[in-house]
Image (tube, rainbow, N blue to C red):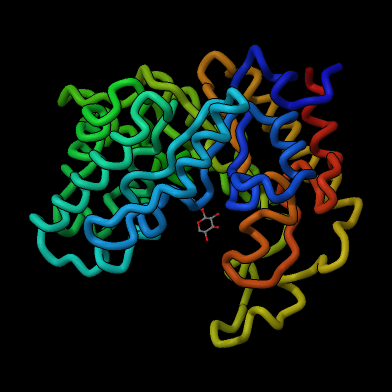
Length: 342
Ligand code: XIL
């Protein structure tokens, strides 16, 4: 029985993780040991986002992104680029753009420069991130407001030209859910009908331990795959603690940070919750294996619990336990449960 995720699922799909700055700079030897032994795909958690890589007009900072790509090459990993066009984490100057021509110039320069620099080195780009609303309509982002729905096609065409070898993905959260999924399918079909290259769809997979969504996920895998594209799970984690919107009757004016109900396990994860999380991951990976012919990659959004963004989102200073490795980099029950499937 292999003691490594990437070895266990080697013939099925890639197993990825999101890397932060400390991982890329190899400042954390326990984490880097784990990354190299467990994962064969990497995604930059923040450092390729426009606000980092393109901080001012015409000014790019490739210091960390060059190191990220070199780290992936050195370790022979599948290297994901995340993300070219997203309304969030844009540089301040771009957020202030008010007309179509300037935004189109920003987007064109950005894609040409960033995707062009790493042409032939990035294996897969998240070209457009989070363009849809929950009901499947287009999100009223700066891109949609100024350029209309066609910004999606423009972005994919620019990316294909700047890097003809990278796989190009549309990435979003909750697109397994029926209404949003329908919108995504319509969007992808339009791209395909207009001759635009799109290789895959990324289902982020930021889920809650109480979600009962396996059937919905299965339908999404089948329907997206029927479009002739790959399906990847790109940002997998299960929050095990409630979010403000989960609390019935929560007072919107209350200071959530001070509500113990929203940080129920500050010291340790109770065994019962650890076991429940293991069952969630086991059922999920069993489903992934059933559809391994359709799934290209499964990426966790972080290396271990201590590093997860869910300790700080949507409210700060919490203690969450969403991943397969704990704060001491030790495998949790969920890790063993997933490996037992093989
Ligand atoms: C998150 C990072 O994990 C955080 O560190 C950052 O503060 C905000 O962004 N969808 C995405 C990711 O596509 O880029 C987001 O990453 C999580 C939601």
